[in-house]
Length: 491
Image (cartoon, rainbow, N blue to C red; front, side):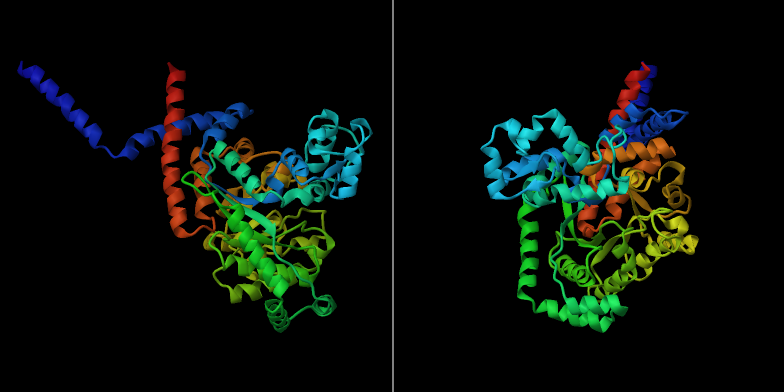
């Protein structure tokens, strides 16, 4: 009898000890199971791509920090907006025609005789839709033998096709992106949203192109813009657009923030005016958390004016020190531009403009003193937004040639992001699959990438802590599910 009592006491004591253990102790055992399972997926000559796809679709992924709103919307949704706006699409050029007379005339014709089709007409015609997707996205680029533009031109030219409707139904577009993000377990998007309000000044342009501009010139043009009522009205309209379109997007499961941007291939006054409005916007609303500059970096004007653009950012950063910059810099590869053009873009974005994050950062191996730059990025915790799909397509850089291998080796923080998921027809889970399959990281590394995408966001600290805490819970659930599936598989 005493032996039985002692035995019962021992069982009770063991149960009490187990219940008293911190919750993390049980979660850690699940994490260990997931670590071993993930290692089995990436090891060997052939990574298990189907299983990796399921794994990363299920895995919480934190945030997408390099995300272009217009490039994230899929062409099929843009075709729906073509009809909402009463436009049509020329079935030969695939350009959107907004002319009311053309639309009315074409709709009066039998379908077979129409040169300009509605979005629904295209969606229901598999051949025409396939041809349109080859223009409005990267789809089938490597899957047919027609005469094509170079990949970089194909990518950047897509925006010219859907731009006429890109800003027409923003509330619906943001809702779609939110639903898609939640479906793949993504908590946050920091989207490069709409082009910033713009103005032009010929005298400023003439001086800039003749010999450059001084801080005094920038100050004078800034003051002129301050007195421009139309320009100030556009800034107010932009703020209202973000507030109205973004209403209802944030909730317990998802958060979105916005970046206005300048187009780097425009005239100097246009670029600077966009920067001015971007900084003002970012300092006027908590929903607008940073400033960016976009556009193909390798074209003539972008290269010619790059140093001047960084000077402009420096000037405005002094006036608005709290505004964060996430600058596209170094989206270049050998042969795209003369060699000297590869030597300074990342450095100047950091040292001159004061960037807090670098978008792409592809030319780091060619920059002057790359080890020094990477040490500075590591010490200052300036991360790189790595976009594997677009880097592969636009620049032809992938695998061992991709500088993410350097950033990993030298301790530079980085995050994975989509760039333009609608153009590339991918998602963030797919970017994680590419990263895992190509570079065989540990589970700890990919989990850290998820958390870092929140840590390096431009969110307010309270929002960061809220999302990080949410990630803790999501990873506990995810790891428990994977561990349970492995336990069943082992039986």
